[in-house]
Image (cartoon, rainbow, N blue to C red; front, top):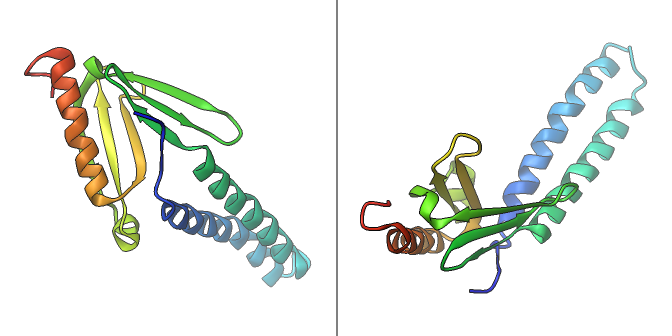
Length: 154
């Protein structure tokens, strides 16, 4: 299987989160300007900078996210400032979920969550999938994990 990218609508989810984060970071500056501790332009400047950086990060994050399912493992490649490459051996898979949060449901997306044996980072999430794609991926990983480790793997 070749490297798979995420559905483009995941950018909407990530940009909405960026807007929310920008609003939260800007709020104290708006309060400071309202109370006249800061100049009136300060919250606008801070908001513009934070919004630009967080939206750019969300869009670059989409471009850097890919995954690949092979016969032996799941390979994830992601990260903007720090590139993270993760390999999850199929024999380590405990169970697999498909998940749809409220924002994901709104834009018609889902995630696949792979729970692995181990203490650190015992789950891996693949976001930005269609609901059918998440279900298909869940079933494929289940099938591959069972084949890799026997009938009671998942």
